[in-house]
Length: 522
Image 1 (cartoon, rainbow, N blue to C red):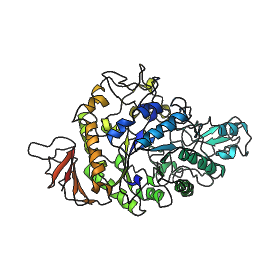
Image 2: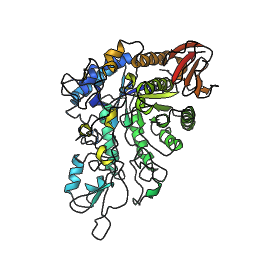
Image 3: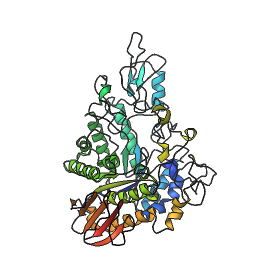
Image 4: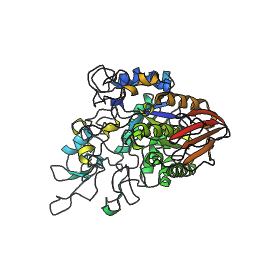
């Protein structure tokens, strides 16, 4: 890391989906003990920091994002002592640890919501959430026409006739951030984990905490075809209200009161990149997830436009970009890019693009193995969105990591079965198999991350496009490093320089094939 800038500006974060990373007690579910036992793997991979998806007590209706106690560990993942041991072990290895915070909603099993259900309308207990009387002659209609991001109406009626808002599942009632108890509670939550040594937070649905005054109806004709939190339009008033920035400034004040360059990144889906940049102003979040690269088709023009839009918007607020190709909510990029050998080749090339753009990088567990999405049967799908969202499946990208062996569960657990079924054809994709193969995707990531760490040009903001053949992208980082990605053109001549790394073999005459990338010292 450069001494002149905070660590997070150029860090490579590795997202751990705890249920799917490694099982330490043999029950088939990944946990904190399993993660701690595999930290050396992450050191060898070459990442700088971890991001842990929720491990808090939860009914697991929405994969842990329905939190019933934000200051404890769910027994399926371990204990607070296990968490403390994990943080200590990570810090011994110079790995930073960041965790998810879910401020838009609680689980309906949270004590506050149970108190609200037992209390009367207009009570202080109900004011922590968003309860309203219904419309219609007898209040039988929802208070407005808002849909849930997971399908169906965003309102649920309780026995006394009132309705409460849930922008996600009915088991995730939205919090009322206009009530001062809510920011005070999250001040407490942040400090609880900061005091235990975490280095930062990922803020879930950071664009959703503020609601428009009066909760007016939506013009449903102006919503995106999906209509959910990850595809908002400027007319979708459920998200990206200006008041949210005040709440996030409160988070930043807490972070800045601690030593050690603590940080926060926001999960923010907005209609355009200029709106995204507002969340990373100097007194708000340190980083914002930028999904432009993730959303771009495998096309040179689309990739270049995504990079240009992202960097120009963030320059205006002095924040670095973040670069993401996959996470626990989206189809893995091997699959998005065509699957099979084609998707794998493209994913390897995209990795060399992602790891050389200026800013921070977020990898999702399994990216480094070249994992694709898994087609699961309906019976194997525990994700709440499956039946509520016209069968949008997020579990296909949450299948556990294969560690060793020739058959499922591939060393993920000492038990017989993992919490999601693992494919019969993953033997060649295990960590053990790929560690023994110098041409594997794991070997590529290890080499790329090692080069990134020791290449000064990749820790600067210097970036310039250079001429490239049709269907290709090429750019310089600083004066001594160049990247070329052949997305759809014929085999292309490389820029002058010494080849440092390629995503696949060059042609016999030294050209870069289609669906390949190369790094060069120039």
